[in-house]
Length: 591
Image (spheres, one colour):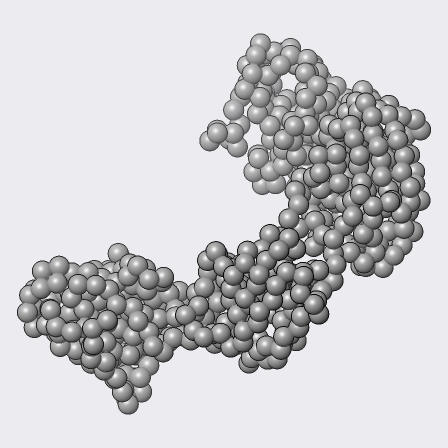
């Protein structure tokens, strides 16, 4: 790299130091440059100047094409002594922007154009001699006055920043450790310092917090067939950033409570650079422990043994089994974190939480399935469920019926279902596992709808061209049944809570034309309709103002079983108006 002059600017006047305009300057962006002037002749050695990027004024006030926040005074002025090419750029740990005003008043702005992270660069070819006013701003507001180095060159952008505190893979790691697969003394704990002034997001967008510039640890690892776990314990909320041998960053916050962890299921051999941070980068750095293990996070084995012997037995059932439901007494809870244990697996539905045993609580061998299959728990404690299905995917739930979980398979497959009964708080608790083809809970019939029951607010028969249009029916919305638990179909989500019986029946004698069905209420309502072909349609809020609405472009003739629900639980009896129309209502006119 060629030598270049490096100038330090010292500003003693308070207004100058803060980059604030004197009152007499008004709002014209015409004040004296905060850091003075630089002379530059194209073709000469690059010139650099330490400055601060700053400002509280939106840069688009200087020009609509500018971004970020700048001061009223230019940061610096560059006097170009001859015509030629010139490159203005800056290096900073903060996302900065540039605005350059040429001698003729033309303004050129940039963000991130220096091809070096978030550093800006403005290139002017065959630029005339004269004075160029330069504003170095910050892309975001409220980030203070970050250090930066402003550079002027002829042919290339220069973004060097010798004052950087940002984490860098080029810095010598603070500690080095060499391990090979199967190492003794697992877990291996290393004393480190967590936190620092460097913004970890400069490593990768997925990283958070503040850390030191140098990596806390370089781990030289010879991989085998075992996984690799990197975990940190600290007093305050910690974060981790790991640069893997393949050049990819892996960052985490709050793997276990407020402690971060990064796992590699199939680790590579090579060097892992590890930065140990604190989420709040305003906190002082603190002592922490970095834990390296092939067992699990913090050296704890969180693996599940789906092939293990079930704690509470197993049973073979066939589609259409009676009695329905089948009840099994189990103990919920254990020492394995289901969230960590299922990480890396296929989560087909739900979020796996809670603590469970390593072996399944129960195993079901299911033959000749004929439709849906439900697993649920009932307990005085807050319980969770995780079910490993015949295809190896995980289905999880927490709090479907009160604090009790329900896992549903819309179209059950034949095969083995390994069931884990978990507890949310970690304590073990007695529970009853229910297996059903009808629904969840001890009384699954009560959690299902009955489309053949007498409608609560009657039935109406309408034909194409009916009057008055719309046809209105005053009803009560809501009920005790969760629509999601009672209604299922391919790619179908039904929100809200409804009654077992239909709110109303519509017998439609149409001609394949459009039909609009919606509800209006002062409460947040939902709608679910069983159509003449047996399929379901559901909605929440499509009609605006928390009102649900469904559009049928070519409505089938036949019976429509209509359920008007409430989004929230325990809101039975909310007054609502069910409306049916062939005319396009305002809420559907934009479709």
